[in-house]
Image 1 (cartoon, rainbow, N blue to C red):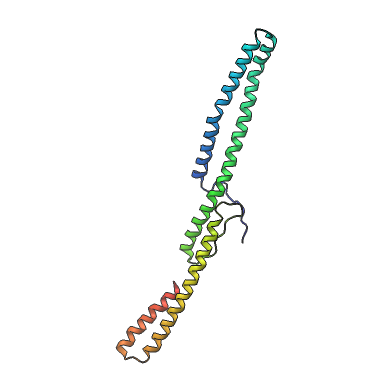
Image 2: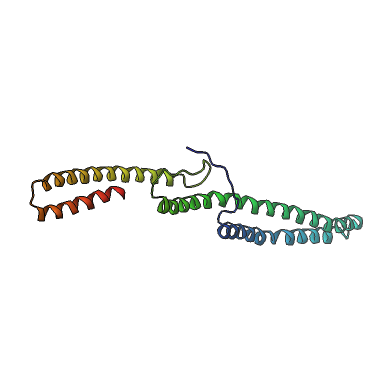
Length: 184
C-alpha cells in the first residue's frame, strides 16, 4: 500500500467551506448568549453591591469592558481554530470522494484497473476494501469468460477446416470477432 501525503487542503472547496461555515454559524449563534450573560451578571453584581460597597461596584464596572474584549478575543481564536479543524476533518471526507472520482475517470482513459487505496486516516476506508474485492471478482470472471471464448474460438477454428468455403468464411468472421473480444 502506498502512503499518500495531503497535497491540497481544499480538495472540494465548495463542500469543505460550506461545512466550515455551518460550524462557524453554529458557534456564532451559540455564543450570542455568552456576552449577554456576562452583561447580565455584571449588572446584577453592580446593582446588588453598589448600595453597600460603591468602590467595588465601580471596580466591576471598570473591568467589564476589558474582560468582554478579552473574552471576545478568546472567542475569535477558538472560532478560527474550529473553522480550521473543520476544514481538515472535511478533508478526510472529501479526499476519499475525490480519489474515487479521479480513479474512475482515470480508469475510463487508461482502461486498466489497479487496486484502490485511501490514506490511512481518511474516512470510508471500507470503500476501497469493498471496491478491491469487487475488482478481484470481476477480474476472475473476466479471465473465466476469456478462457471460454478462447475455447470456443479454438473449436470453431478447427471446425472451419472441415467446412466448405461458403460456411468457412462465416466461421472465420465469427473467430475474428471472438479474437477482438480479447482486447476489451
